[in-house]
Amino acid sequence: MKTWIPDTRNFAYLQWPQVDALPRESTLLVLPTAAIEQHGHHLPLATDTLINNLLLGKALEKLPADMHVYALPPVCYGKSNEHIGFSGTLSVSSTTFLAMVRDIGASIAAAGFKRLALYNTHGGNSSLVDVLARDLRAEFGLRTFSLFGSGGISFDGLSEQEKAYGFHAGEIETAFLLSATPELVDTSAYTVNYIAQVAKPELLKPENSAANFAWLTRDIAESGVMGDPRPATAENGARWVEAAATRIAEALMAMVRYENLYQP
Figure (cartoon, rainbow, N blue to C red):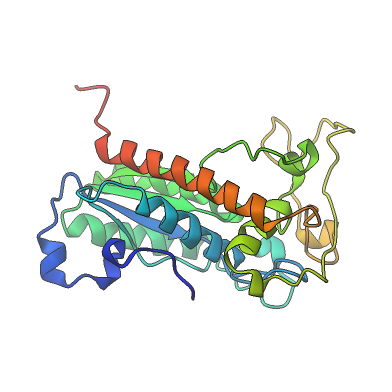
């Protein structure tokens, strides 16, 4: 798997005495969570994992050299049952995902570390990551943080339709990989599908509203794409990568510096 994580920030590249020498209170360990799953006819199965690695790696490059922040090896397999039925999708159950990340958190706590960030770039994991952040805090006393996707950047130049419903293998993900791994993008194989239209608002929405309907990708898109990759460019991808990396770096620094606002 390609990596953009700097060697000096790669936790798995350290020897155990180096790990033992890290300051327990201020060191932040970042656990990437992503997926191996279909991404249409034009993007690779590893898209979510590659984007996680790309954005996190670029963000880590922006941190002060004396700040102790390290990327753990990624949890590449996620809850991807929305894509079951498409060849290449490798999904784990919610129970397995929760148990796996919980056990990693237990190991981190046993080593005396206090801060853990869960950095997720697969939508199917999002609700589980929120659950885990609270559970790891409650069970182990870890100062646990959650961080998602591109850090909340605005994606200047993206249409409102794509912002709302470009869920999967659309313009954003395609642009990211065109900028970083163009050899993995088949630009001759684009397809377009949307789960809903912003111009036709409905009471029931696919997610992030007061009333949602559950969906599977095969309900919507024979190709597996939910969005429109056709406008994607490497130039926009590079701009968005830079903006996202800057925002993610700011979030990581805030996590290192975070203290309880409430002191009992």
